[in-house]
Figure 1 (cartoon, rainbow, N blue to C red):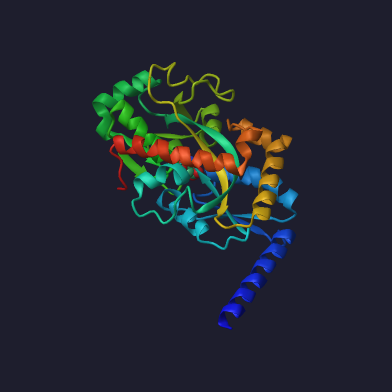
Figure 2: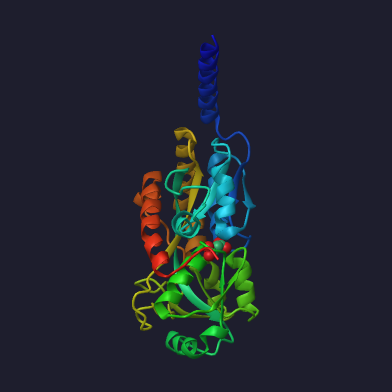
Length: 324
Ligand code: ASP
């Protein structure tokens, strides 16, 4: 008897989920941004959701839940109801680097999510405060050899993009700066502009406007080609540094077990947003790279996450990185 009651309850539950999925969304959606407002993850989230909310007919409210390199917000998102009303803007750190750095991470980037789609590619730029006593990468590397221990490097917490690409950079150039953690690279950039921290490696969408405005220095971009928005910034290779090519990305995730109809609606809205002229212009003006049609699918994002975890784990282990 109990079993039948339970089975009926389950069927009723499923039916309710199906109906909910069909009507979705009937109320505002929350997108967790796992870093401080004003930084790159926040900026990409606001640009992309602007058009997504118009397609979905509901507001997407950004909630900044910063801490532990983005893993606090993503843990909360992974554990939320899989009903499409809580989604997340993850990135190469939270869904690629974090597992190598947090032995007790409370989510598995490859198993605990319903991937929605890639939102933007974000090349990494090596930037320094305006008063840094070097004007190019060669001068920076020379300076680091003799003064390296006096230098501070900003990052957005262990396992973040700036932390993992920074650790990797420091291992390539054999530097051991003092690492200074922030709740996102928005606040880190403010300190860089105030000349109170020395350098960082961060996503182009955060730093491009301040490089263009002459408020910070850019030594190199870590991609094979220069960026159209920073035509004067050499690639790491052009600047004479081999072995440091790295690009990051931001992507939308829902918790695992989110109904497929809802995943599809969210993906459709993301795809439409990335086809919208205004969204494209806003991302591209900041140096963001618009994902191709093939890169925007949930399946492609799942593969990207798997390959990024596989790629970053040995890189960070070899660099001797641990959760400090
Ligand atoms: N770009 C940052 C990172 O280093 C985070 C942020 O978006 O503020 O992971």
